[in-house]
Image (cartoon, rainbow over all chains, first blue to last red; front, side, top):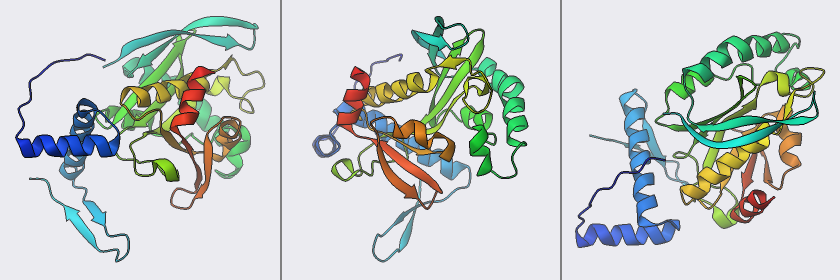
Length: 69
Length: 202
């Protein structure tokens, strides 16, 4: 896999989120950011194709549409 | 983009010897052309010998409708792999690493490499031809899926829905069968982290 390097500057809050998610998902920060990028790309592509992305509450089955601006 | 991952060997059942082949990350037009011109006519011919999709399992042709070209064109969502040997594409695989998550209880909700499509060429299949040619294509591709999962820090977790014709193949591997998934009308299989480690050591 080709690699390119960049410097990422995050706020304390953003870094805290990254630390927390990295621990919860059992992935390094780098792997987590890569995965987040893929997911954002996937959601964006689906919405651009006219698809709708929902999250559903497990009990009430209420659905909320995910909007990407 | 297609890049060479590894030099591999395929066992030629007809000659009893191993032959060099190449595992690629990514597919290109030559693989898709090979599928359209060499695989699809064979798959369609075999599928048409059976009255129903269910019966087509007996001829190992239940994947005749798979849309390799359309899905592979959308490579942003998939990681594609191909094995080439003997001047042809011998195996293809598409993996979704974004939209599926683990179901086994102790790894539930965690990321995994979900194998959307995995197939060996028609002429390599038992029950498809009288004398299948290359053995080992499926195992090499599954190994590539587990390796990708490791590289992405998914710790080897892999999931897939198996066509009925392939259930017996997956049942012979150390991969958990979570039973019939009503939403897909197929069995769902998942490889745990421990199973993945053991699989790569074999």
